[in-house]
Length: 69
Image 1 (cartoon, rainbow, N blue to C red):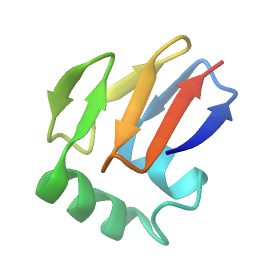
Image 2: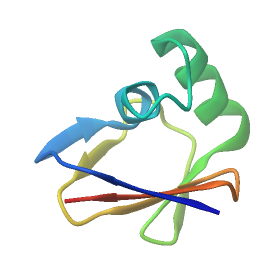
Image 3: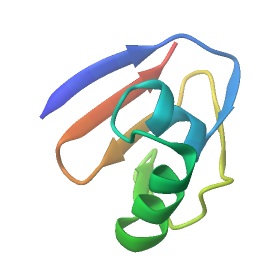
Image 4: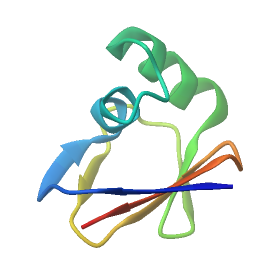
């Protein structure tokens, strides 16, 4: 699993996938989240507009682990 640290106070889930180059566009990120979901601090979400905060741990598709710092 690739581990990524991303520095921010608050970001939307779709914007995080785009900013970390997991998705090439916001539309692709939205589709990926609605299709596969993300884990935020161990809870599953399918909302592309989910707000993420500093300190959250986000996992996507068992391939990426992103810690917001």
